Image: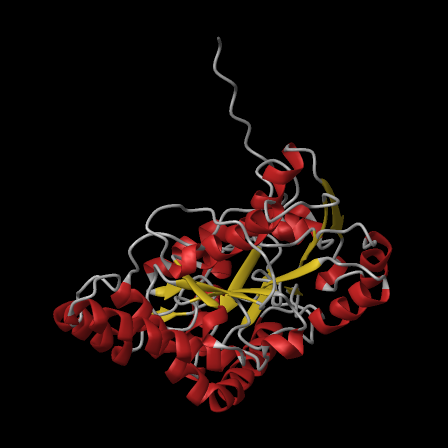
Length: 393
């Protein structure tokens, strides 16, 4: 059976055009973009082309786009760079309890250095805007809220958050991790109202190893990587020219097809949800009804998600038992538990995520093999955490 890839929120298969573009750059435009000879100028032209593609997709000026190695690095640069920019009058951060680990772990570093942090709950995947408004003050330095939750697909109201910041007469910088929303739902930097936006290549059929941070003109950041002064001194290191070229090509293709892709993926989501509910009446739908089309998170009572994920993988069907990146909390509640889902249901959760290449037939195959698993594998009565004894000193 051909492989059925339903884990596009973790990563996507690169477009063939992206691979061709990267190979061409590796073979022909391999010069260091900082070199002044013709090969270096070729490399710089490659970067400029990709930068323009990203800037046009975000509706910004290309000189406000800084390339990074990933969305994670972009998040780190946004948060830690803000914390060391200039003479800050206060050290207060507002974020949500369900952010990606690249955000929460960066903020945790600041908390250890004495920063005050308010974590806003998101029950059922919907951010508590009243609690957020109470938390933001004139002393708040940074507000960091994702656009789309990577676990359940919730869409957070960034424009409303910008209005709250202004209404509270706060000078807080608004950072948005838009990795899961970029290329999936229409937005611009202006429509979000953000000051900093993190995006990533490999979520939109580009290569791994490339991401970007948009920095609104006038926002001050302190660099995290020092060296030759690339990316106008904000992100030193010889640029990964071929990966960035692939990123730019992925942006061009994705945005040229976004509307037709959204319609197709919407149909897939509706069909998949209806099929799951019909086949498994006891299923729990963890994704909100108004979530992004390409993510469905469900729990199957009595099923250990990791066991089912391995079983499906043995039959060339690929889904996720959780986000591919590590949970925000190594010992505390998971993202799903933070949203109010019981631990038992969290350990039965599957994340199914689509791209435009998926088909109805693939969903039928997924349902068939989940049904076969539940028919042949005895249910787990309850979640029992395994306890590993600590080594003796």
